[in-house]
Image (cartoon, rainbow, N blue to C red; front, top):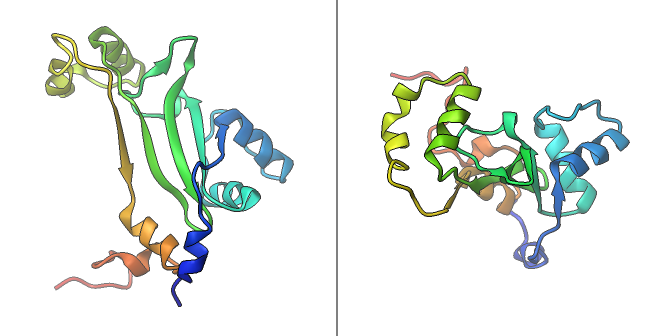
Length: 169
């Protein structure tokens, strides 16, 4: 049932990159009714990956869609330096982005997201005396396995899936 290794060998970097705005345009041309500022669901992500027949990156998301710690583009402060890697059949595989390295900007973002700075003191302290510009990312290992092994569901890769049909002792 797994993916033929020859199929994986066809996957070659670099992968195409499109902006969030370009993704919205593509999706609306395909019949989706999605507004700028809305997040993609599984069907939208799948349509984007199918459209390009392979993995792709979507970047430059609206600031309000991402976490408070993602850094904005200096020339376009309504957009953040964040990207998702989307793969066929699975959708989002990874999310990453540049992190805010300025304490004042971080505090401003916390307020914009209606978060209490006192709940994030430890995180704010990391920027108290300055920090190096840096990025971070997260990968869904289960999603990667499901894609690589050509499985129908991510749940097939989770050692102890939580479902309504599964009971715990």
